[in-house]
Amino acid sequence: MDAALTPPLRIQPVHVQRVSPEAAQKRVEDFLHKFHARNVAKNSGESTTSAQLQKLADALNEGQ
Image (cartoon, rainbow, N blue to C red):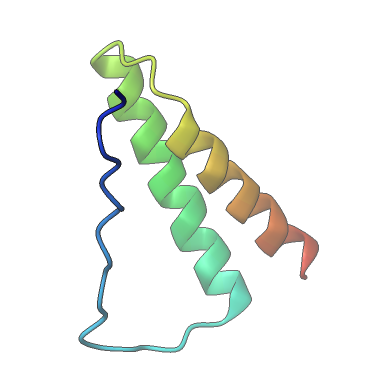
């Protein structure tokens, strides 16, 4: 029998700050760059998160 699936954690924001699409894109790109650097430094093969972040950065770039 398969193990029961555990749903992902739900994140509840406690503060909202609006940012422009350009600022959001810059923040995502900065985070993505740092995330890649950490993965390379620790030889991590995890690519799902970085792929999703890259899609987000690309979508923000298209919106401009």
